[in-house]
Image (cartoon, rainbow, N blue to C red; front, side, top):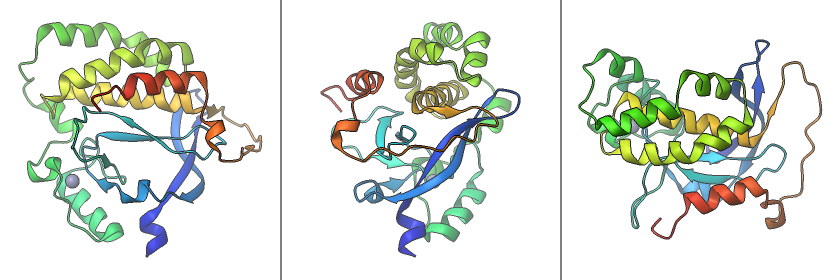
Length: 226
Ligand SMILES: [Zn+2]
């Protein structure tokens, strides 16, 4: 029981044959003492980040985390993707708990359901900013794993996620969170379709946690208030 509920999967991101970036091809699993203390939410406020071949797991904020607030990871059941009863039964089956996260207590709709509901009265300025940052071209570029696009828009996406958070659940927040997660996938590194290169694992030391772009991400994501 300890292993399936406490180990964390280490995955690599791959592209499919059409050149679209897919995620989560499991390549290993590891025991992370600190991470295994973090509880689940179907509307998590962090996302796990692990550069290919390093095994170091870092958490990045997806939602505002004020001092004293609890950090919530996602164990695989997300409110945008799965409805309430499906999430409850899969979490109960694998992790043996009844989820009482805000998405479950308040019965947040899935992304598809949100799309069918009347649009929320959101500030026009923020919605316009979202439309310009996350335009069709940017979405396509992220799907194609374009590093420049990810670097160009991830800070704007962080700000948008923060601004939309008070209106959660809403389509706009889901879109921005998904795009932000896509940026992280690109920063993690990915394999192109058909690649059979062996992943070279570096020794896990603090020295390996020094990629320039990760340093920049950290600076942005962990301001003093968090
Ligand atoms: Zn839940």
